[in-house]
Amino acid sequence: MVVTEGHFAEVMTYKDKRETYIPGLSFDKKAIVVINADVTVGFDLSLIEYDVNAESKTLTILTIPKEEIKISPDLKYYDIESSTFNEFNASDYNKISKIAKVNLAKKLEKSTLKTNAKNRLVSELAKMLIVTNSLGWTLKYNGEKINTDKDLKL
Image (cartoon, rainbow, N blue to C red; front, side, top):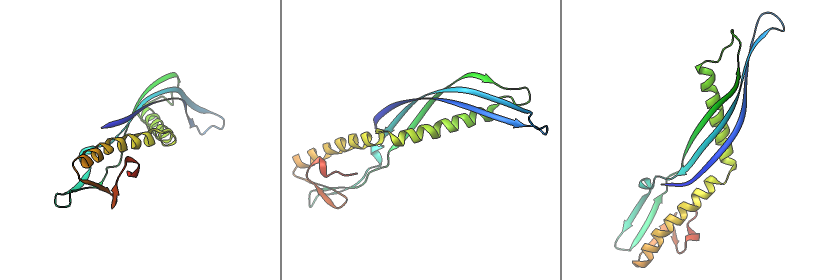
């Protein structure tokens, strides 16, 4: 279940220099990269582990899976400059993509997307509370009885 989506944009400058044995002579390459990325944060609800005790009418949530983060960057290259002796190749593009994903992951950590996703998950789990209460059952998580959705602390 995807619970939160976000969009990040960034402009990055990539530079690489190949030095020669002649002092002051180098072969440079550079590019401006515009990164637009869609990020989704979700939870695989099929991985929730729970225990049902019909005798005591208790539903116990044992584990809740960690969030799954998917980053889908779209990279556009502008103002690519390279020299004959230091041209852009596949490893440069792979390196740029890797740097972009690391930067996006850092931005994601500073954003509220993960917190929003956990809040949405709590609201989904609160539906279990409503069902268990309406059937006269008890919902437990982390050894505590859950009386309200505010008791669901992830």
